[in-house]
Length: 122
Image (tube, rainbow, N blue to C red; front, side, top):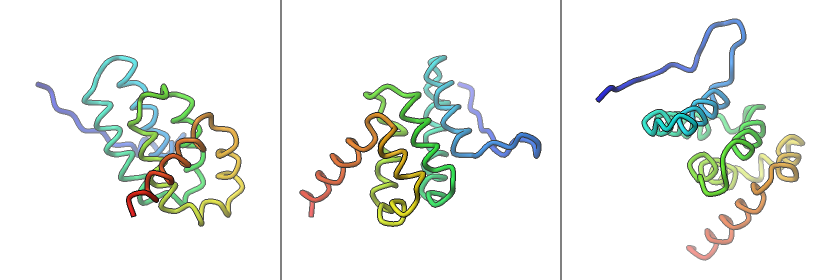
């Protein structure tokens, strides 16, 4: 079986956000039925999202992931919901995050369900 690794840094010109790059790779892995690519993109995305949630592109990542994945594909969505819940107070201070709460179909509902489920675990 072929193994692979990739680097999301790209060239200096037209540099793409690593979060957004991995969302695109996740989409490609899904479209062309390459589960290993999808899994690798998800793993890298999770690492980046956990450490870079305060970056300006985090709300864009939420919008892109929710726009490009079906509701039943929880891979990226669950990561985004979990990271958002963990940092909700800080994220709510930004207009971009408030916008994505209103505009990304399904995100606010997923976040509320996750918060409610988390409160029952305590």
